[in-house]
Image 1 (tube, helix red, strand yellow):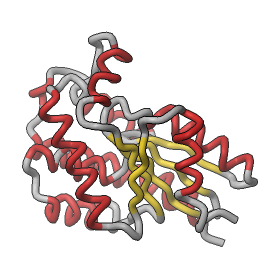
Image 2 (cartoon, rainbow, N blue to C red):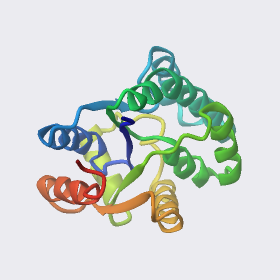
Image 3 (cartoon, rainbow, N blue to C red):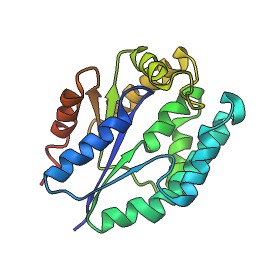
Image 4 (cartoon, one colour):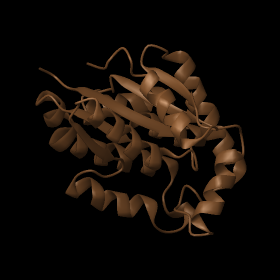
Length: 207
């Protein structure tokens, strides 16, 4: 029996990494075998590309170059980890996936159709069965990430508030355009409240 592919999305400071672990634990408690992974990364090749993408000056790569690098990392991740695990019956929970490229590079004026076309070639168009987007009021996530990182943010976290507001708007646009797949989750509550909301958004998929 085929498994389920989930992605967890959101801007900086939305609590994705924390909620990914909590959600995986909640699913495991329901008897689901979960493979928790991340993007960029998840495989040896993709992790190598992650280092190129996340480190260095903000202007190290152009938006076009970033888009190509993310697509290359994702293609390896899908081929070697995500697709085999789902086909083997596992639930794969990925901390970021193609919608992050659509939001972050889309906020830098990369055409959404071009991103999806590249995804179609590199990853054969694989989309999650359900995408959960952690949403915060504009500015709240950026402020959280600054407090969390203490000035040591990566190339994306180091960008200004206008960029992060544009990313949040892109995520909301995707959620509005694709309601069957994408659910917008209020991330402003307690950790327990957010995890509960995430599980509620998966109720129709749970065994």
